[in-house]
Image (tube, rainbow, N blue to C red; front, top):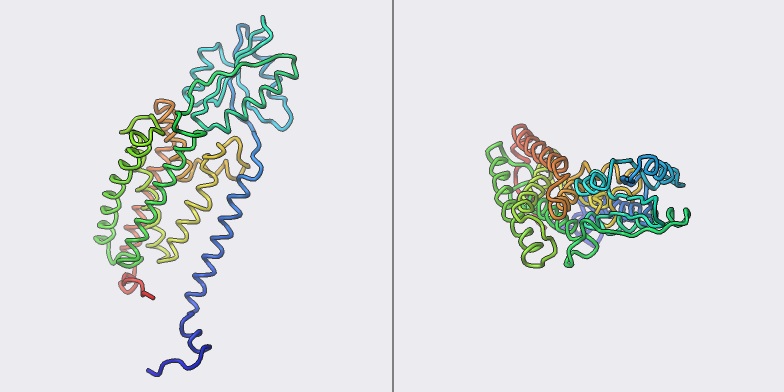
Length: 344
């Protein structure tokens, strides 16, 4: 074969239409990344933060709840509970994000917050409730019933741990595709990939939990609990990536990044928990692996596992669906498409 002559011919031979489309796809992912993060984080605003209200007498609690519910912009979603013990229990169970204990006999009330669920959320509660109290000529004392650990700056360690697990999941799946073909040749090969991913997930989950816990003292929660969560996060994200690759080939890696990074990370409730995010992000966050993982990690670390059940089911669903699609796509994939990707 005669080699191409001249720069233009070399360019046409080197830059294939497929390569150009892939580069355009990367540019689109890049722009989506910038748009999603700035769109989610540029103007955090509290909206419908669930808060319990208690007082020695029901009329006083109802009156305070009505005043908080009428604040402009609906920053709070107050609910009346029987007493302080019930209010505290709702915070510890993650049913609400804070609680106002009204003292009709004195000039000051008490606000219960949980900075372990996110420092920005507890600060937002302090600001909103504090302003409402000052407007009534009252003051408020703040009690943190689930404080973030000293090594967990602003309660962000859970978020970063989960993001690390997510990155490990889709990178492991991507490496399997690069080394042995985007689509597995048959269901046996797909099962082997899933098995390799499971082994990797067990190791990544344990090592991440050990680093965040005993090594760095950032997350004081249950080590076995975080290990189990990490294994599930890594396997779920990896299985999703394998599934996308099985359906779309190498483009599936980009689809996984779109789901987990572009959509999942900004909506995970890390820097700004759900009540501070715009409606779109706060709606999709709990249904995506980074959001489910972050919420569960905080629950395990600071709330004795309370509230972690739902997010764990979300992760399990992603894992099951990802594994099923991976096996199903392998059963119908053309043999030719299982060859390793060309290099260079």
